[in-house]
Length: 115
Length: 112
Figure: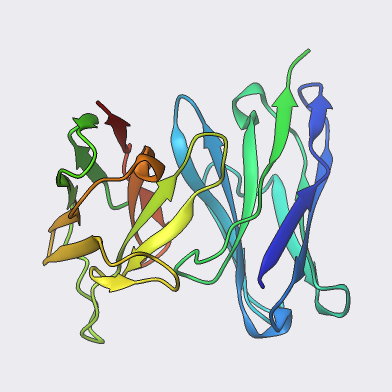
């Protein structure tokens, strides 16, 4: 069955960096584009980035453009999110999810940005 | 960006009774390919969201047939024919017409 497992979250100071990972299993990873979505109590669910199956196309929400970089390693069935210049309002649970329909989600990883 | 608005904010339902919730988009979600890109998700307490319905009315794999979606253009409805205890949680609608994907604020379903 499809499984997505995120990791890499934690506590980081404003201006710091963090790299999230999402390891996939149960499907042909390279066939599907992948997304990162985050959730906060205040702003709810927010789509933040997607990357195409072969990695040659990516898009970002305006709120993270220029600070976050999405990437993937199909050989390792892994998705990544490099988060730079972190701000307190980036505090959220971050999920990876498959395809445009977001048909499968991981369990999420918590990122806290605080001094 | 397309704004998604859900009502009601919360719903208290007796087990075995029906429930209905609404989602409105600020623009039509009908794509030129003829499909309408509106999905519904359920987030149970302590869990990640899970896809229930996509393209307005198509149930995702394994979703019970007591869940049904309807609507067109900018107005959509999710119905649960007979609510069960496991249906408790937050229900979100989302459009995937174009980027950025955006979500509604959610409808919280509780059991009476």
